[in-house]
Length: 226
Length: 169
Image (cartoon, rainbow over all chains, first blue to last red; front, side, top):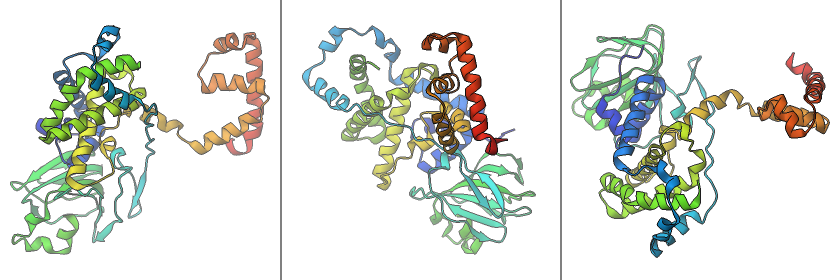
């Protein structure tokens, strides 16, 4: 069972589009996997909508010709412009996409199927593929760890989000299952380890944070992860 | 959505969308752009909304939220591609159920076989398997006895089975 969720604050920001693209994607993937957060997000959206639009759109049927006639000319022009085009937006279909990392097949989360990611770069048991998001200081990656793999002990000067997509891993805090959303910042220190291997989606804040004397992170593994 | 109703609703929502835009962007010009983006999107995507998915206000809110996300991203990183629908799909439920039937190649193949059937048999197969009609409904629509529907269907399926046999047994 999923035990680690985004905080209420994060979920609320997610629902009102005030998070960066990388974090929004991470939460979107989690929400798809977690019925609890899915229900929460729907509730937040509904209540946001109610707060913003006090008039119920559903009462629409009762509108009368008088109201239509009360629109002034500039309003009419504005609407004529919008409604002049009768074409509709088709919704693209999202076909499931599988990826293969070191002979393991994984299905990509729905949210990532249309966003490109680089080839996997391998160092030891770690393989990383950068997700092409161009999101300022934030970097998103798919991180694959082969069975028995371990990430050397490290802390975070910024923050790191790890979303377990498939497989398992554990650290000092315990064991994680697919869907777990793990937020870590400078106050955490951990040594993730996987027995059977795993695939994660990670979001890491600026590499700048790691330039301050963190020579350890300039080694190949550090570069790979961040 | 009827045009007239749409217009009137949109008029009451304009100041509200603008208020949301000012909160997001802090600039009036961008907030006005959001109003236009949102209303255009609502107009063009109205066919995607179904009342069983919840309140219409919530749906309009999500359309506005998505437009706002894409605009903000464009301002920050000059990115032209919109990814809001990757994050918040507007058609979640139907997409999931769609997957089972999304084998286009197979669909095309089946259509090709169907085209080989006599018209009378083809319309029965279409009605029952593609339009989800009951045999009774179909009989009424085609103005033929239910028994005829049944026998045409049986003949058609037999023929399809022979055609498709080598690949599907």
